[in-house]
Length: 166
Image 1: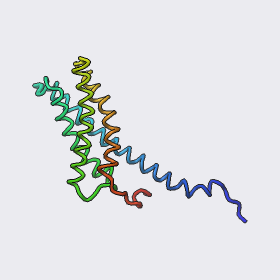
Image 2: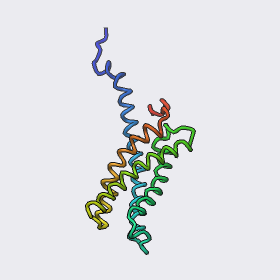
Image 3: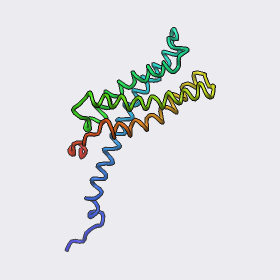
Image 4: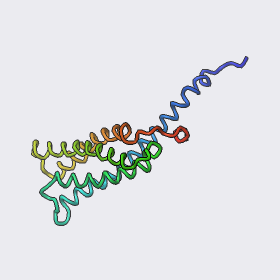
């Protein structure tokens, strides 16, 4: 009789778990990359609108944030649909975009709420304070909310088992 090594016996149980963990880590890395690009669009556009040439929305920080988040949302939807969650997307682009928009509005409310609280309640009105409240605190809270909600409610088709194993 061949002695059974406990690592060999446990390997079939751990194999799917390791593959699932690797798939999740890859998904999180792609989500983070798409989010980083959307972040650059969001922060860049917000600051351009508020403090750039002509200060187009210089006196309207909330409007500037809404516009910048709307543009960043489109960048994020394209990246998440075609890259991050490409194995989980459904055939209904319209339904996904609508769900993505609803979840993104939730993230927007979080970011704008942080900016509103800092700017109007605490009276912190400097460019640095606006960026920290909206683009650091709001971003961290909004990102956690978005990832969980996108995965659960938007890109919720069952992934192809062959893609998860790859």
